Image (cartoon, rainbow, N blue to C red):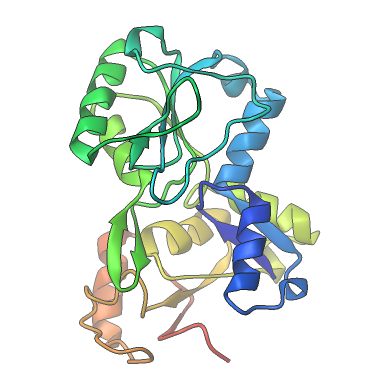
Length: 249
């Protein structure tokens, strides 16, 4: 098993989180996160698109959830859009500052900054393509939502995770296997299932997560109506091979 996550944090943080949730980390070959991919691509700069980015960036990060460190990447965080060469989106709670401490901001204020960035025509790297995440049954807005709005403003976005096949290819490389021997499990049609479809991989949709409310589910383990699942799959243009109420065995 390999964990693929749109977390904006490094892979090592994800493995530690797995331990804190009560799982034996030795059961997993490892983890590949959007944050890890972003860090590696910004560090190596061997991809032509990343090589052309420049070094000064507007940094959207977290505050209450803990800011994302850019140590070792030789980046200059700026707050003035006129000085920025690209946007780096790790979070939706704060604007990064030159000294590394996040300045908390409302979502609307971050969106106004993005409007200025889009008008300038600078690209965005999104290190967490999720639109929302489930926290204690509540949905929290994630960087993918800002990235989608940036595209609507005419901005160019590099999506560093699901549903882009880049993260699936990295997982297969880690496992030393190919799509014929893989199956992806997740609760998001737009990210997990659509990404598996793009990678040519079989998939399992867990209905009790992000889409629970859309499917009319109220309790853990409740089975979704098959026609409701089918309608939702058509809405998102993402088609799972299998459907389960929860990831249990």
